[in-house]
Image (cartoon, rainbow, N blue to C red):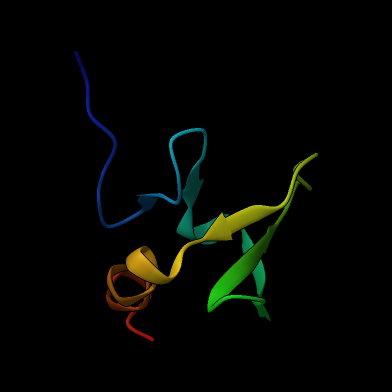
Length: 62
């Protein structure tokens, strides 16, 4: 089984894995979460929890 490149893909939650190249915007959300906007647009909000925010920032080199 092939694996996705961890430098290019991040699991934001159980349902969603995003590609770094698809990120358009990141904005604050309530309770210390953030919403990630991607292209093409996703039907549901892509949330990054406060628990995953630190590893997400590292992944982005943010």
